[in-house]
Image (cartoon, rainbow, N blue to C red):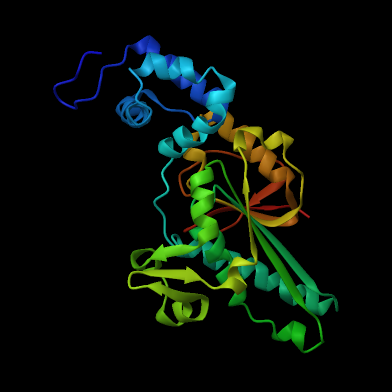
Length: 291
């Protein structure tokens, strides 16, 4: 393969790039636009070198072998997705989650019933987001329930396509810099020091989060469990606009009436759904399913 003098990454013909685009989208739903061709090439090249293959074409052919590719796809998809995140990455969104869940707690108390909240973290990556959601719920006031002898139950489900990311999420060990958005009090309450530069989420929080491997491209086949909140940020950017609409429609079907869908700012433009009402919150992109 001819070497580029600027990037030292082998060239890729347009037809070859489009073939890789199609293959990756078919398998994962992830869309690599033309302006990210260098990113695709460098990601492929890393796997090619790790596997001691000769080039893009040999790697492509190897991926047609289902028995060989079944494990390799997890490595490739992991290389194509960005896992750089932190706890409470977008504070306004977590504030909204707390507001929504606090309202449900108070409503349950008024109706003299226990409160159960279920949240889905879509594209949970290495776990910072679902653990942040669990901590946010731990910080809610339960006085209105406990005064009546009622209880609060909650669970967080995190889903991601990457097995390596999910392995890291289950370990729940994070560097100091990942925790920079939270106060020392919160950190002390929900983390134990692991070593000189790392912290581990306490077991009581880890037990609240279930991690599952899944592909949003197959959302139509996923169980239609009813969620109070679906948290889906920095995920839709990986999909083509038309695929984003299909995913969003699948998410709406999994919201309870009154449930809230929280997206990343700018991830979808001019989108409306007949069952949703936009929440008036300028710092969040969120919708509520009508009762």
